[in-house]
Length: 336
Image 1 (spheres, rainbow, N blue to C red):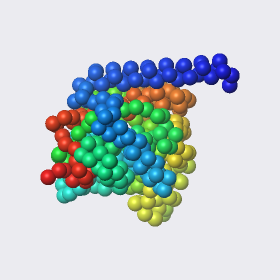
Image 2: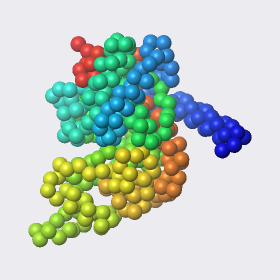
Image 3: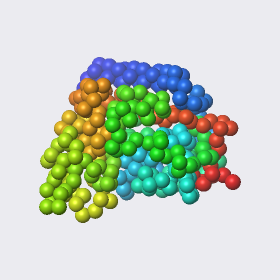
Image 4: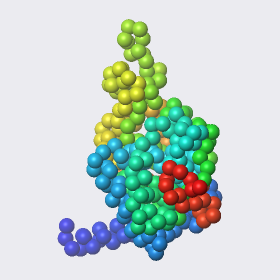
């Protein structure tokens, strides 16, 4: 690339970044569901703990180097936190009848990574960085670690004091949901149908237990495969059946193409009718979202640009700021 081309490329990249930041600020100002998101800022820890984000990023990198499944776990953990009580780290609290105790959350992972980052931050910046911000940073950094876009998100979230198991089921997406059921949950969180398509792209990484999708097919007494969901590719269903035959607690890759890379492969496999969940297939089958799935399958840059905006909206759902929450000393326990 010549000097002129290089300069043009850098100028264009800077322009895209400025436009993205503009859209981010616009989202924060327009969506009332984001509660106190107007109190968040991009330089919240600039004085109180300037190395906070770098400490979290290094922790995520180290953990992911040792265990390649960590990024998917952190991203899923963040989703489950934000959809229940908002992005306030309430999913991290241990104890009977907490969110974490619900069967739907039993398979969540990534907790040790958040705890590790928190311990380090408590050494250098005691009682300063919230667990809610740590989890948001970690999910953002997890995506970047596996090839996703490098995006900026504001901080200043406080940790919630409430974590109730009864709040889980009404607020999370079940893998067997219809499109309308998913759209309703997203709408309740201030998220659009476009956000639903975009954020479903998180399934391009991570693993899932067989019992979360094996109701899409079944074996009869003679071992013959019967399709409950005809939208699933038959050959893919056979592969899944073989993988899950011995134990429904076995995990398989959400994305059979590039399971350890954050890319647009998820949308490509949807076009091949290889979405792992019924909720995945619903995006292709519904006329309201099919064209967006096709667009993302053909254009990864378009997916990444949309991801940056939708992730920002996700990370700002019903956040607690100032006296609405606290800065936990340990992420698994509210302060005494």
